[in-house]
Length: 307
Image 1: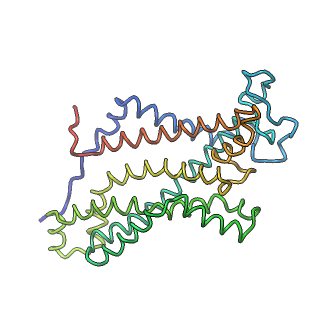
Image 2 (image 1 turned 60 degrees about the vertical axis):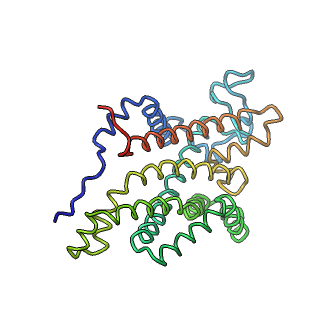
């Protein structure tokens, strides 16, 4: 008996995306932000993270449309004389990098644990899911605050700044794996009882081959949706940690660090340092969530698709 399985139809995904104007616009916006962030050193001709290129005399210049604006800085400057446009582009790139890398760690851990729990079952399943329950009972921010505070105390603020990106990636990635594990475990349990898996086992195929060649391709759809939404959660977690002073340093600010720096000055009339990065963060998270909602509907085989 053949063990080949036909996965849920996805051939019309691109066509649905073209017809879904909101999702297409969201995807285009994220691509535009990512491209602008990657090309910002060439577009701006200045690295806002290079302290040698900053001039304190340019600090707190308002946006161009406000009184006292400067054509060199269309969106104004922060307290260090860094142009807000360049800082937000670089910060968006850092936030996206941390979000994507953290979700990659979440996926590696969560998929491995979820597949093991769902396919093996029994006591191992119960043990792994209880560990997931314990992890979920602790908020990501609480785990990250404790871990990053310990690291910052041990290594010092300067060394912590050099390690901020990999530390944030690891901490956020390790703290959020249960979302992937539970999703995969439920999907694997459903696939485990199907005829094609029973036939593959009867043919003597190894569990590793059955999982890799047959089960995982059929649980990919919910994983894509979870991964998309988790990118938004990871970016929000990084922004919150940076706002609390446990994320990116002032010399290499992400969107959260920019908001924190501006929040201290917002009541003195320097509103743009906090407000503009906040708007970029809101738009970025909204766009990612819109794509996640689109993928959830488009990859759901139980939903009727219009021709």
